[in-house]
Image (cartoon, rainbow, N blue to C red; front, side, top):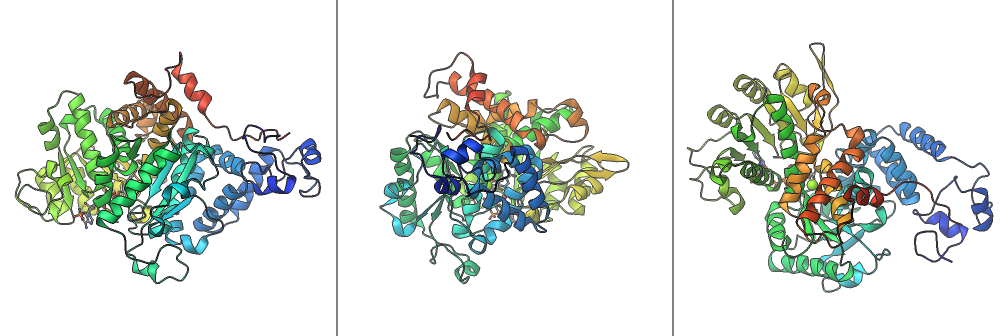
Length: 548
Ligand SMILES: NC(=O)C1=CN([C@@H]2O[C@H](COP(=O)(O)OP(=O)(O)OC[C@H]3O[C@@H](n4cnc5c(N)ncnc54)[C@H](OP(=O)(O)O)[C@@H]3O)[C@@H](O)[C@H]2O)C=CC1
Ligand SMILES: CC(=O)C(=O)O
Ligand SMILES: [Mg+2]
């Protein structure tokens, strides 16, 4: 006998209770209790799914810290996957700040301290040469999505080594909660290549390798071994690279994007959410993208990724590449990125325009008079009062996107941006901020976070079994996100679809991207008569199935 729909041998009651994919805690039916040997192992009372959700909410409300709520929800995922996703999907706007930014940042910082039960796969530098075999230890046979990090740039918190595992776990929970990708096809992975974070190396509870980060050829060989092992063991799998330092993220994407099904979320997903946000802002401004001047604070993976996609989008609208690049300017840790600088990384060079050196961001604003500032610097409070006031003096409606995560690294808060601009800023931040009351008006900040993109693109790639992930798919996704923002939503200042509707909007985006994947013949399945129905039929439902 097989477990219903899971293709696994049936278990006895005690085993079922220990399997998070089968466990219903207090919601087993009378027949299941009788037939599966569960009598006595669970209390007599039988809960409905709604009663179970009410209990979870009550228990969560008694946790006084965000980290306490994170630990509780993670334990629920380890105990009863269906209930976890039912709770998450019942109110994504409420629960996302717990399982994702900002709380996941704190959870990663303390990952070794809060560990209850390991989740995902740890591939360590010590196990090089054996990655294929270790992938085969994963119990699910058909993994379709891996989110992998080496932990070197976890949000804006820096090198967190193997503690970075919290990020793949959180991102993959959102694949399911925000776009319905079935959890059994997802696999979180950390490549434990050591850490240069001395605090972690000195922490007796740190669980990663206690050695400096692997670099150079040895590192590249390990990445190659990993990518090729995934092709062998999970041939239909897409790899999402997440939170690598830019010295590695950019070359890795360049090396593999045309060879295997993969993408980098910090580069491409972030870029798409930024382009979507700019489309929303342009509707408020009634202006064109090529009329804007974008000034970035931070010229790393996220910043140059956003600029590259803005350039591609402007080119689709008939602007030349040179003109489009000229609309994008960067300030990094050494000041304005200009042609005379000799130490620039290759990925910054396309944006190193002719201009005298400018040491700081505020002066760059005064000289370049940008219409938009985008913060991807990890520097909290860098958009200070002088910066916002300068933007509000130069522009009737300045675009202000402090995208750095988590909240503790945000370049400014929503309240600061609105207050210092007299409520005129068009604002979106990487982490969530509550609405702000100003001069009798309620202003609703958007969450400019790649969560609007990666679950939706993931669903499209999953349902179509796409061979490759291209930049054009991200432009399609960006346009689809922007199109779902109604005029009423826009009137509140919100330039993204409401987070409460993220599942609905992600499925719309997934349909558009899936259509595009079939159009460009990158699908590995035949085009169905109705692509929308294909997506709908692929969506995971967090419902208990009968186990008998
Ligand atoms: N909202 C979202 O969806 C996303 C947000 N992010 C956030 O963006 C941030 C950056 O990520 P990522 O681009 O991958 O990181 P990188 O490390 O690749 O880039 C950081 C950039 O910030 C610059 N920087 C550092 N300090 C300063 C300073 N004092 N003044 C000006 N610039 C400075 C660095 O300069 P230099 O090059 O000189 O070292 C570098 O160019 C993170 O906080 C991350 O959480 C990332 C992805 C998605
Ligand atoms: C959101 C995200 O991917 C980051 O901050 O890195
Ligand atoms: Mg990231």
